[in-house]
Length: 298
Image 1 (cartoon, rainbow, N blue to C red):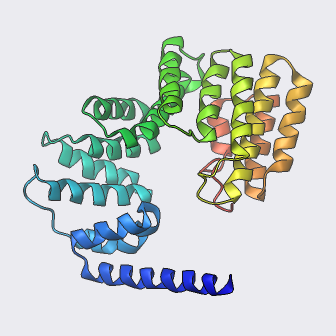
Image 2 (image 1 turned 180 degrees about the vertical axis):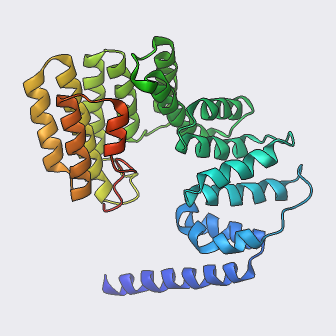
Image 3 (image 1 turned 45 degrees about the vertical axis):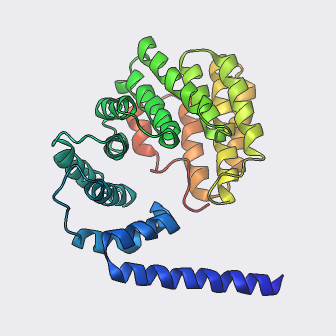
């Protein structure tokens, strides 16, 4: 067992050295190879400077140009440089070469910037232009969230037609994968709750908790506990809004207790208090730390 552990470490070190060598090469092809090996999240911080030094291909109809735009665009998104990503992508997509994969990157930047109307239009254009199947579930989920935010923007009563669109995309996200992430069940539950269909929301959140117990797709083990606490909080909220206030309060208390980090406890505490003592949405958003619920401490 110890020998195997040493072997794995040596292999990992060898791959890291290989990636450094590729990064030193700094050709577009070499940088793409690093992304293929490591994924966007790990690769982009390493290769950002080399990407900036690349020369943009002139032929906007060619694969090299699309790869260049995708490489630079996704790494700007990974760096949370949303404004730069939007400006960069809009300037290139205006040429008429509106590839659905590039539209996905633009839509993600708009979505993260809370430009929901723009994100919806961009994602739906990407789907209409033939976005690859493997990219569709994530886009469906983002569309459901964007429509949900639109439905209740400004604290107004949720618009039924917009909620119907949110439900449509939440269901597509759920049905388009063989093993959906537990959070996808939770997303549909939030739509059902907004539609005042509390019993359906409760069953979906119970299913999210059940699936989370055995789900193997989280990128780190700690996220299972983070999501358990998040689902418990949502379940408590729905029971409370249904009129089962004691049950709801008990579940929300349990969610705060179950949170594995102090920062998530703080977030869930704010959510619980805002459920028991409602406040305007703007005030709640200002009180909440960013990146909820995927707490980086986990």
